Length: 249
Image (cartoon, rainbow, N blue to C red; front, side, top):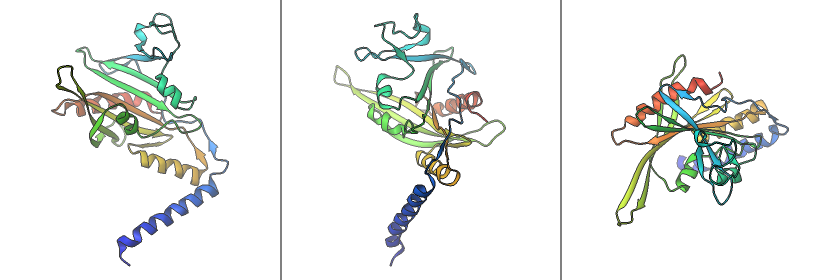
């Protein structure tokens, strides 16, 4: 029998073994509140100045605001509805103990970056592949690549970078386009990876071999994408300065 014919069977057998191990060893898993990051975004990252985002939870409003625009804490300036740290759609879809924090950072010249942290709750169902939501929001992912970011006093950090394009039709019939990027990585207790599949493997490994389940988070930065590629240097510089502020050693 040819090797390529055998491969599917080997894969199935391996999956059956892993499933059996999971069933045998993940009963009464110790679910821990420990995490690898703080749900915190600093007010300043180098020369960048941050302003937290809040989102109206009233179904008829759902507007977003910067913290600096809000006069009465917790209330939407437009309709008086309750404000939250995630959108109404996110609040409806994610487990109730999911923690989300979003912030816009601006340079003195006006250029902006958005940063966010999504921290899973006890159900561990808060974290998913970002590509699903991004495409659902009308973005086309034109390229994905892993960016190595040099770090102080440790190995480089691998971050997944998605080059995105959004198209729309203008009133005069022409097509409008917007180039952007979305960079992210996943963080667990003592673990980091830019790959969703590897995160799942690491989670399974912790459950099977260590009988534990820590909280995972994913950290993202996003912004405009220039054709010359300078945005990749911007990601490196921003993440290198943000990292020690939020990641727990």
